[in-house]
Length: 498
Image (cartoon, rainbow, N blue to C red; front, side):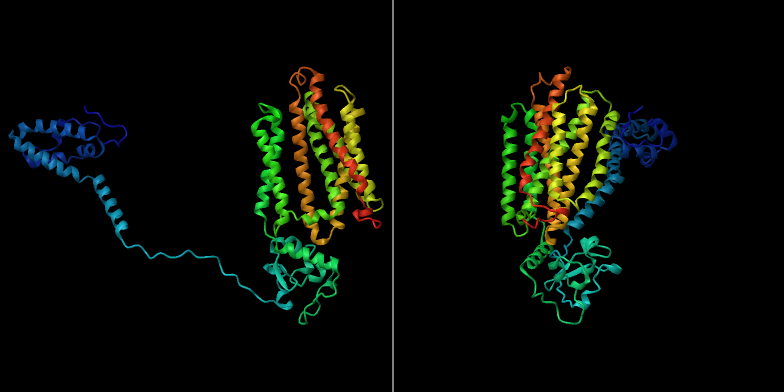
């Protein structure tokens, strides 16, 4: 019995006894032995088994075949072995390899096609429009949305929800919007009525209207400021990471990577601000901050929202860790804030048309301070109804009043061309202030001495949470110093007295 390789296909007959093969094949001459060597089972062994095993089988068969052929001369064996070597070369595997070699040589030696230059971008086609030919590009029937400003046509199809059918600027779609944008009016009276007449030269616009118009032109021609975006994202990520990780770093604030994170973060943020003043297409136009009320409102809501967002996280954690409440019970105890938020939003919408918005935002800032004061002075076993419940109600008054007033100011008092930029900045600053407030509170929470923060001692455990409440109190208190500089009237407009 001969050993077969298990990694190769099995032959038809698992037995390779030479005598069994001899019995199936007449063997009375050299030709008979050649015929025997072509036996199917033996060929399977030649193709799929080791060469050494095949040689052993052939040798054994030859020895057994000598008496039958009556030919014991070495020449007979040499002839058989020579024929066997020739037959072994013409195996299917060798034929396949030879075919692959021929194909590779052909593809390597065949002449290559002439090199062609890659196709460039499609050429830009400039088209001249008249008021009548521009009219069909209004977003209807699958058409793109175009509008003209100062004799120049802009493709605003990506903003179809605003400029297309059903949008707030749909009257400008396919029309000359120069006068309407300058006057901040969407009325049809701002559009050219005679489509075949001369274009509106807008020579009667005053300086403020021209400024509004130039702001819109800058917006339509803007491109994404990739350098500024990378600088501000990397700077904020490094700064917030450094502040958050400092308390748990091996050497605290003096740890090398903490110092590097904070330093490079501040440098990148400063570089971003400088670049915005130099870039022709800034990500954050600095002229938006020239509006004093917008800058003050953004700072006020930043201090308040930084305190509000971090306070809500640590208050929920306090109820779980110190008061030992289940997550479901914590949600029930925080539910008054949700209900209060709905009621305060409705109230703010009704009051801001009749009361100076400066009063509303001042009430919101004071409510923030009162809410965080209650949380800072309470004890771990103080009554929920005496401290936490009123703090929840007051904090949501502060959040909703400040947000509503600032949002209304952006939408109604800023120039039309600046509203989208200011709205984007407003929402971005709110999210960033939340991240900064949470990072600072986390650093304070983790930075307390471990002996004072032993979770087995309620007083020590509450000390960590009280520290975060004091951080929220300090942040909200800073906004009080900015309130006297606001000049607001009802509905978020500027005070006429300045």
